[in-house]
Image (tube, rainbow, N blue to C red):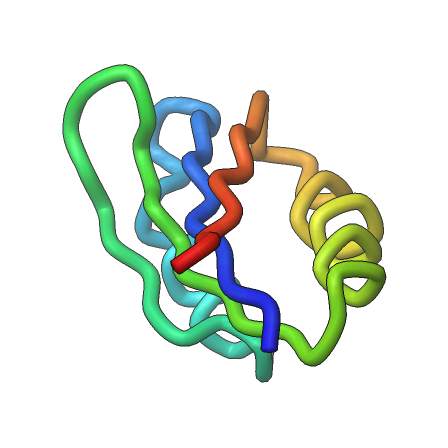
Length: 76
């Protein structure tokens, strides 16, 4: 099992919309709206590292209102 936290910076005012959309994705365990440099923290679990890479590149980064992401992979 592969687990990661994804820090997301998004367009101003789009936090709630992205929160709702991200929570509808199967491999998303939780989503939290935050204040500061990053607007959302998303906890993700996938079966393999390859599926995690695919999720980040083909799902998360395709949202038009997401400006940047940082993926923190959990190792222990």
